Length: 538
Image (cartoon, rainbow, N blue to C red; front, side, top):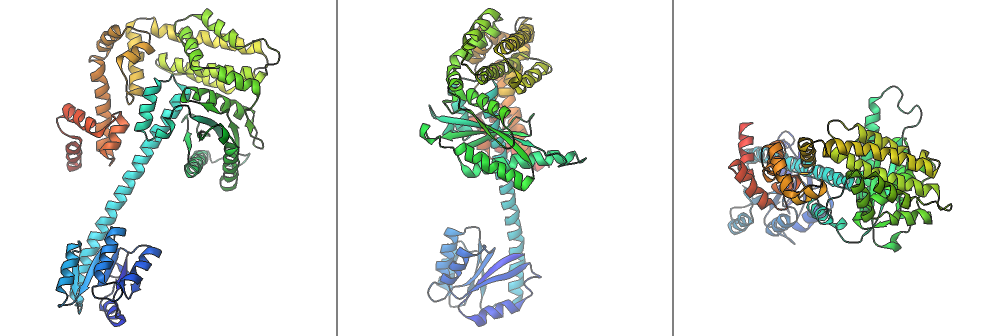
């Protein structure tokens, strides 16, 4: 049913028009009435918008022309029909110049009114469908963007980081420019939902629904607060992480704790679920995000559903700051070069024998190094991901350690496991290493990948890598990346109504014009032409 606002300064005329036909049978309902333009605007400003405004031209205070002009400026989606007399030609002409396509002459003839409403019903229905399609496209675009934003944040805490410049460039592409500022103060919070005993009984499928509701509630609350960026590892659906963007060190006034308390309260009230949270140490700069994540996870591991642990031990904070990107790089090189002595030397320098060092500090360093192991394993492990799963399990049980010696023993064991995987891939022959590099490119083609960055990452000569990649893939590195991006773009063009600018971003292009040029060169037609071709085939 379409809503109508009827505007005429004569009540008798309005009553006559209402009585002409069965409006509801025609698909319309006269929802509002007004005697002049000013009264009509007050209705439009304060009530749900009608689909159609049917207005007289000559009225006191504000005539129909002024009303139509105001509607066009403020409510462009509202259709307008003019009621005019034979002597109102100049007014009607002005209305037509404002874009009004439909009008009725007074006195209104029943058949003309019926015919006009039948035509308008079809047009309004099509307008409604178009708006729904646009809304669905906007939702889909937002969902795709949100997925990529979360994937980027998860990569930053779990994987080997690209150059900071490449990360910032990707952040600009994904509308995360507020995170691309140098030396930002940030903080990570981890929240886990816990299902009370007997909450779901034997209906196991309901667990998925509860997890989805938990995730949606966390994301919605973060969006309302602003400056909070949620992200999640899909393998851990009961856990959600939040990156807090802080103004400066003075902003550390308990905002994260208040956010956690309110979110836990809502989860309990609306979902009847328990939850445990950990609040990490504040950190400065994107290159220390793993430290913030690690301290958040450790705080979570000590929390209960009643109390939220907060990092804050002075010694732990010192060690958090001591685990610099430079140190991480040294440890990574030791593992990837199979230099267990160098690795052990670095680890023993971190794990001092100072009796005042709390076990929490050792646990943090263990967690942080296991994160590094996971990143290396992901890079070099082919086939299944059993080592990554084992490392993740060790990460979750890291709090079980009771002594410095236990910590060092586990790290030594894990280091050897990771080195074995690196050895199998990196030193077993060019073919195996090429497959690992291809896997890495397949997972990261939306970034600004270069041969030089890959060569550095996999410890190869750039010229050698170029030849090795072409031998394995059958095409050059550049052509391979283009093929991945074009294949993904082709899929998005055929399956979604996303705008070209959105698709360009999703597949790794910094501008839609560059994307369109590349697409046309690859497929022989523009993205727009390709999409029209796909639509015509359906």
